[in-house]
Image (cartoon, rainbow, N blue to C red; front, side, top):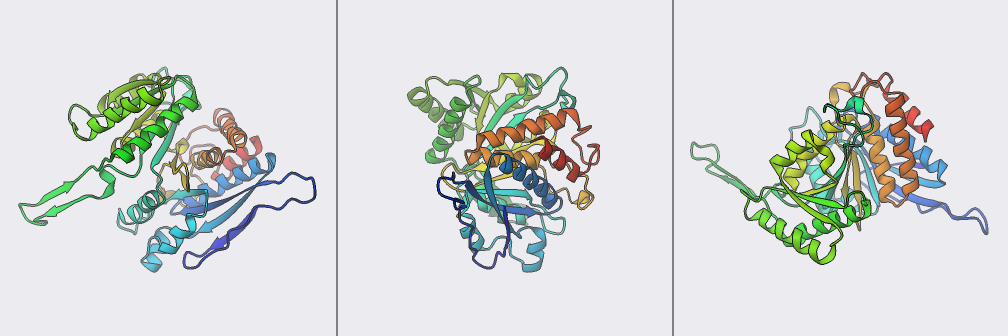
Length: 379
């Protein structure tokens, strides 16, 4: 493992893959991973994710090179700059980014989220937000009589369009006649590439091979007319083996609670995806176990725990690192190291079921570092 610190104000030299130690000896696979600890408890949970990644790397003969980036609220307060252009250029060189959390109590909401998270998602064309919703232990599920066999689905959220493009504006702002317009942008290109990813993912997942389009065709008759037409055209032409289903977003929220076992893969737009994935996190046990990926299938992808920076817990060693560890697992899976990724998930399931008292901060029965140690040892 190689650790180095990259200053966002200068160029870096990214480590090259490991050289073979001798003639005839197999070349060790090497991957460069950018690490953004971020704000609050972000650096703490990322530290445990790296610990577990290193355990998996050792077991499966991988070389992981981590390059640390100082991005987040503290840096913004020092420099008044959220994300330098030079850093975006550097991050394009990496296959994957591991992110802790972004959000600082002394920085106005929206500045870091738009300046770092949304900018990276848009400029790196991470057009898929991938959110597995999987229950590891029924003790942590708030739903009555539901277990791991009932909650195992994935949400594919379009990540570059919709209401998050920032299209719109104000007229007569600050007056009694003020008008605020926020437009949802849906292009055929953006919708189709998201749908194709979802169909391919459903086929590869090979569980029920059922893809559900989550929308609101009875009210949003322009945007979701496009989504629905493209959904059926692509499915009929190229994925006849995948069953197609449709549910309004309000019905989807209802069935998440009543019958989550009905779902295999769900595909939806940016806003609806943002909402239902948080509900999915609660169904699977809470933010402490929920991880997600911002995916560019052909470029740089970014993986993160979906909970916030939780600044009130900073430095106390009580925050749950399992979501960040699962983000590390998703990173390896994206890199094609499926065996190493599966080993991490198996270890997380084992520790969650056998050791963890609660997924909530301060109630796990172990410190943040101890949970990382337990999972690393189980790998």
